[in-house]
Amino acid sequence: MVFNYWTNTFEGELLENPPEGELLWVPIDEALNLPMQDWFNERFNMFFEPGTFEIQRVWDADLNKQVSVKITRM
Image 1 (cartoon, rainbow, N blue to C red):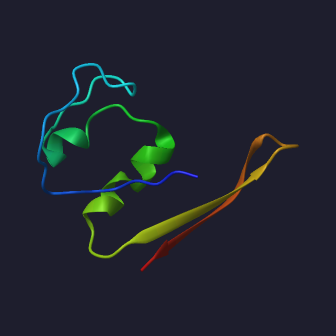
Image 2 (image 1 turned 180 degrees about the horizontal axis):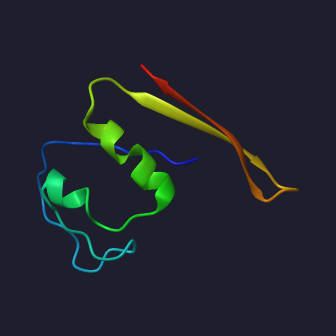
């Protein structure tokens, strides 16, 4: 499972050496052009639309691939 969170406020300081790697704040229009995994790129624009969303994927281990995806917007 992957949970993503969006915020438009921030308070505090970024860690110098976080375990996830270097973190930085960038404008949304610049973020859209950054390299990212396909599965994250697919959902990235949805973060900036009204409401919430859920993505359900079915993975077939025998075929070693995704066999279906369902996106629900709430």
